[in-house]
Image 1 (tube, rainbow, N blue to C red):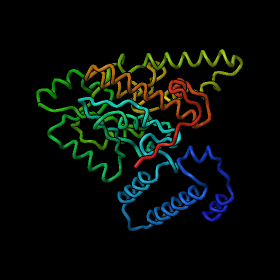
Image 2: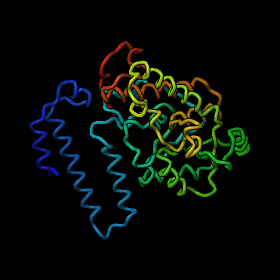
Image 3: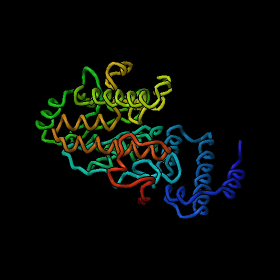
Length: 329
């Protein structure tokens, strides 16, 4: 394994093209090297802290989350959409102000992933929040929301004991409150663990199957496979499935039924939230806008991997290649 010193020497002799620098939102190789060295310094500090035997497991978890929140999973990525600045989609997503407050409760393992879609909810929805589960300040914010009498909080979660949208609407109306929708963002296993840490009496909301878009997901999958078959008729199906578009690779808490995805289809976090808002508010513009944000993210992620776009969203803007770098606070 290379030491930090060896890595630094590699960077000192590495060459990044102007396009690569622009994609990362930086102006020089020197800036790149300085950023990476500072990131390594902070990581060394974290590892030293985690190695202390007198530090509690809870405090160690908070420290890991604080490091991840500050540094992201990768250097130079946008803190909002988790893409490199040159592929950032934050300035292109449509903005909406639904009555329902949406909170994405994200597992630390999901935070910073370029393939994540839940992050776009906070970018698209006024009042929306993206909170890392296990980060002390974020956990305090979430608890404050759960305790706020101005909101009727419900977790987006499938199950026989979950409320239908109309039932939740009626309950909120009786209480004279707004609805706060909490969407867990992570794999099924991670989401179950996160769910177990919420108050037992927290309401659950289930999204009707026809609004959670399983048919649309299956249709996209079928169209993509047919396209791939026409382009590469001799390639085995198993190999083609490894290239499935981003949202088809998601194995999140919003597969309609765990272990039965092949029959019911899969939906990513953003699709599940879009379906829930459509069921609660009936605003087709919000629903379609969120799905458009998903297309932007899928294409941007594929561009970042130097792959062909699926939806052609760059062509919509009359642009090719990397998008201009976007700075964020």
